[in-house]
Amino acid sequence: MGEYRFRRVLLKLSGEALMGDAGYGIDPLVLDSLSRQIRTVNQAGVEVAIVVGGGNIFRGLAAASKGMDRAQADFMGMLATVMNALALQDSLERHEVFTRVMSAIEMQAVAEPYIRRRAIRHIEKGRVVIFAAGTGNPYFTTDTTAALRALEIDAECIMKATKVDGVYDSDPATNPDAVKFDELPYIEVLSRGLKVMDNTAISLSMDNNLPILVFNMETDGNIERALMGEPVGTIVRGDKR
Image (cartoon, rainbow, N blue to C red; front, side, top):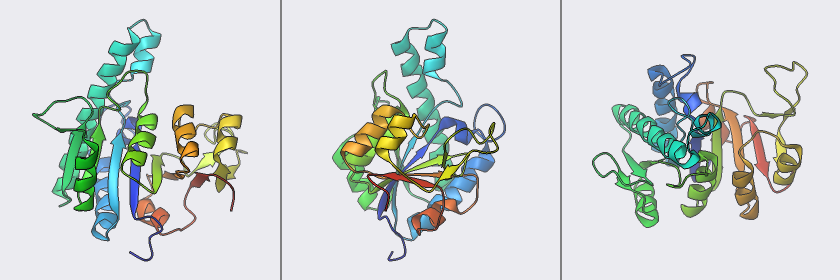
């Protein structure tokens, strides 16, 4: 374990990350790659928890913008995260990784209810815990869920898996001159409106000095490389070091 810089991490996966190039749903190849990477670090002793989004199936905010009641739409989005969590659990267990899905909305036939102390106990036993259904409340994103759960389980870092290799000053997909940051302070993320996580998640992380590592999940082995301190992605924390 000495070579890893974090002992316990919270991995934040967007729903969009799970759909690969398909444009909708869940790509089994993406799940397989993620599961292999998580198994590697889990077997090495890193304690891993996961928060997964649901945007590949249903986006509450998008539905609300078209007239649906916002709370109703958000609850539907939470249910989408449960579907993703179950798919990820299936993939991880096919790779011989012991898991637990814990849902903020009780549905005991498919998931355990979220109880903080029980979650920590699972993690201490080496199980990968997947947190589903967001916070269980409308108007809160899964970014905010990730920051909240990371603090609740005493994670040392949020690892945000994306389709780009870090944080840029503008969208690298549309601006070939976009500049990538290696490190950023929280306050600069907020003041510049950089799309790392939503402002609530950034503020919560800043108030509790919880670092956020943004990296490209599509490059095989990047989870382990990031944990070993290799120059992978962008780290957001209190000050530049």
